[in-house]
Image (tube, rainbow, N blue to C red):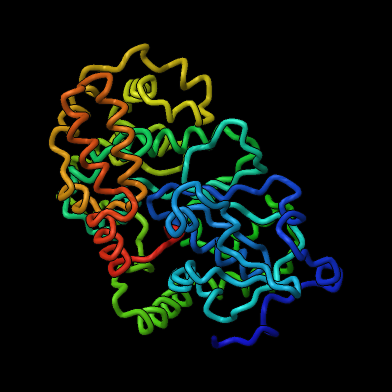
Length: 409
């Protein structure tokens, strides 16, 4: 690597003396939760900043991608060294494409504080968690950015309508549920992509203050500079030179308000405002029209049909607003989707293998109650994703050639 181990983040004498040598001690307290949706929000920037400052970040999405959902704790991406330092697990080496910090050393020294845990899921019941840092971006920009990054063989409207693997909600309703449930956690700090673009150093300063971590202005400025778009793009270029088969673009120069220059997508953007407008306004985003915005949870009636929802810590105020039975439009949408789902369609959606398995399981549970005729086809599809099947192995090879694990920027 380009930087020697001696150039790893500099700690104070006191912190070096007490550097943790194993995971149990560092995890003595609930982790600070760094939360972002699956849509690009700039979260890789804050992850890199924290690493630059010697704060270890455990990335649950990355670990789920390389080991399988829930099979390993997020800390599995870091391997302890005998001298108290850490190295990145070889299977997580693709993060070097996303996080420039990882390209400058092979051994890392972290501060003796609980690591930060990055997740992209709904909060779980009885989960031990500390303060929450919620990263958000205007959904109108974020959803389009994800569409461009994944490049699915789906139309824009098909992409937005595609059911989430766990909740079976479409992209708009799942985003709203995700944000509402995490906003209900206390204490919570909201960091916006737009604030990062406007003044990265100020946003980092405010985040560190929320985390009750004390750094000098010079340390903060250096961390922000080393995590800039230019630094990330250079790291991606170095990674791509070593891995020419990986063609997924990690660092796209996302623009604030880019959605306004996309007239072909205007109907969906208006639908986003109608269904999530109150939440967008709460985050400080301007609405293009003063249309009446919906503030109901009719779509969440599907929660009464799926066992996965028993795992999630959903605020009671939301549960109280959910209809007592699934609404017919929701039933019709999912029934039709299940009947038309094929292995080709799954491939076109460019889902990770684990997400395909979860989606098929959720649809199977739904259809067992509402459309048993579709369960046989769904079970046959599920067999394609059992480990070792020909389709499963071919899918893994295709995904490895096209894109690598990421923290979802």
